[in-house]
Image (cartoon, rainbow over all chains, first blue to last red; front, side, top):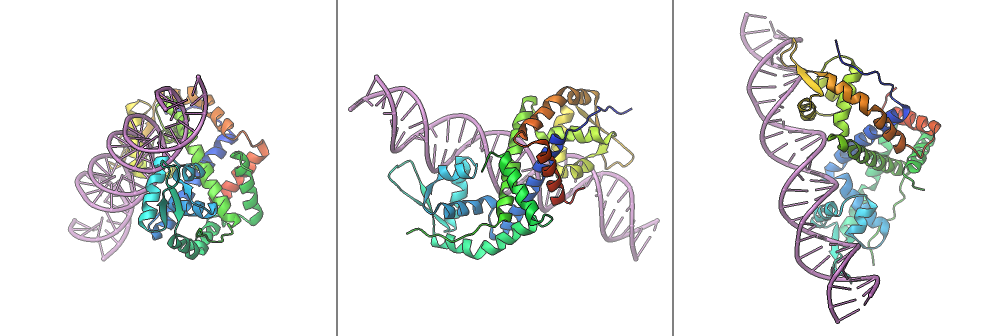
Length: 146
Length: 146
DNA sequence: GGGAGATTGTCAACAGGGAAACAGTTTTTA
DNA sequence: TAAAAACTGTTTCCCTGTTGACAATCTCCC
């Protein structure tokens, strides 16, 4: 005699689980992909954020943009700085480290770009272009973005 | 003079990032939600899997169903067993622990069910029913499920 | 001015999860 | 039947990220 509860999973529950699992799978695949450059998806994200900003920004601001804690940004920047992809600059506010993309960092972004975009394409391969756009839109709505 | 690379982010890249971020946000919200019962989303998942199976299953099988490592399942079951929600049974194959839902475990599922489903509904609140179904379908296609 | 309160970056401690190594058991194969 | 291969659960170690505390600095308001 096995204990059991009669449960009718709601569509919301099922969708949420699928969302979390798929996201998790994508993180792992992405991390594994970036490991060939000795870094994490998140390290790469820092570089992209700096490049997108177009100017040096503070560590706190980086953390805000990538939804990560300040403490973690310290570690991410430590590695990138050690690799010469990034450097910390002093600025008027002496609490703040402005982080700037170096020439090496920009060079890395340039040479890795195609490979990174291919990885994204392959990851979403089962979906056609319209479906990808729909997914993008729904996720945006879910997060209150755009 | 700031170093910068001209990058045109592909729609695939943007969708992938949004998928990973949203998934991550949902994990955190979910974990925080379950923390009021002193457990993790994953602990709860073990209970749901056992309930869904309708019979005791091995730890390896649990790991397969929730895409988690055997090592981690050991820890998850340790906690649940300590709490009396689950028990390990010996079986014919002496390598295997069959894990069974206890009466307490079933009781917990029953009392927490509505709360859990409400959490899922709230998490997906910005989407209407059709959009949730579409999201579910697209994620399934992406993962090669159903 | 001069405190009270925010902010910033860092560090230490902790939690969750994966990979590898292991010993005990099957199962397969020669 | 004996040996090799595969599987299971556990332990150990590691990696990533968070929280909380801290000192240094800045801002605001009296």
